[in-house]
Length: 283
Length: 270
Ligand SMILES: Nc1ncnc2c1ncn2[C@@H]1O[C@H](COP(=O)(O)OP(=O)(O)O)[C@@H](O)[C@H]1O
Ligand SMILES: [Mg+2]
Image (cartoon, rainbow over all chains, first blue to last red; front, side, top):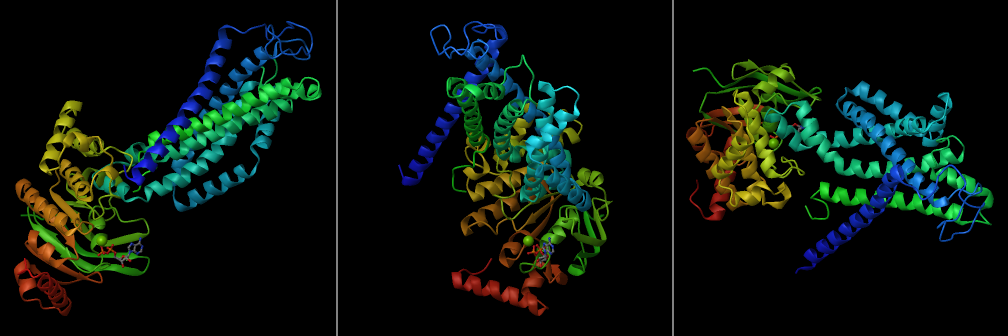
């Protein structure tokens, strides 16, 4: 085997390792989230032991200030995190990709206006934007948080889509395809979207992670999902006062959060390599 | 017989700068015409104008009738019914002219399906696949199963150009515009692609607008030539008389350069 082939195959192996680890991390999270729909070790809302118990066979991660099982809270938090990440990215992708593609086709003036608007929106920190939306709605719920994060993401996705789509539209194969009679709609669905997807999907994973973290921050500030939706952010907030006496209360949701975010990014990286066969090879 | 492509007084401008000035020529069904001139003389612009695909910053005035329909100022909707049907294009650089993320089989299938639907038939998956294989066969691509499932970067330059030709053929156009289809290829592959184009044009009876800066190449496949310099047609006529007895100095230098090149290669000229 030539050195070039070797390096390509090592690269491939590394990529598939990333994909495997990503799948594993996200898969575990998903499985736990689904499991909580039917079963949790203890009642998430009521005390099932003493306050701030240390980990034991009965309570693997111990209990919180109110004597509720921490593992149960953490498991329900996985469900909340997935819901927030998926929901926010879905909203952000639907609005952002549509706007971005329209902007890529728009006349010079309309495009400039849209680009400037998006830049202003993006200049607002996601969290601030989300806080404004949550504050504007009369009652904080999981859904207002998801909507708020989705809107913030849509601006970022729209700007990225616009840039990527414009780049694809300048390519020779677009003109070539048009000369054989492909309509603009055909160009968007057959060429533009598939060609921007590898980059977009990685960005979606990034936004997913940021949304999960932002929801945790909102919860931490008391603006997130109200009880009984346990969220990792609220667990972190509640553990704040007891971090020296019962550090597991902060460590466990912290690790869960980081693991899901990393898992999602690895998964997206792996998927991009599948979506883009030209990657990792000389062209 | 009415012309398939009838260009009259075509002027193409980028802002105020004229790229092509007052160009007129016509191609009748089945006719093979060469458009020659050095790089930057406006050949590609003329081809793009004929299919109504000039970049937005570039404007055309004059008249271009493609299959009886006016192209200058036509809407996209009108043009989309003409593109592929009246004229299809093969480009210079086959790598960038193919979608890098679409398998070759699917890229050929797209125009096949569109043509079948346009002809009123239902494009069943089997019929499309059969036609794709047929086309791959026609352009003499080896190992059809492998080619169909390959991405453009996985096949050679010559094979990519064959794929591009198959895609143009899939439209069954009345006019094939070939914009320097062999320029990006090595000499051996060039000869093969030329032979293929020549055979296909004769077999199908389509008209050909062959664009090149390379005189001997043009001479092999066309009947008449138009010599373009700085966007102005300076000479026009049958291949034999234009190349045999060039009037314009510019044409003379083109012919001279080609002759020198042939002598350097030790061939007797083509
Ligand atoms: N987008 C553009 N805007 C302005 N001028 C252009 C553009 N594209 C090409 N040109 C100019 O138009 C002229 C003709 O280009 P082209 O038709 O591509 O030449 P050819 O195909 O004969 O080599 C060149 O001088 C080139 O610099
Ligand atoms: Mg050119």
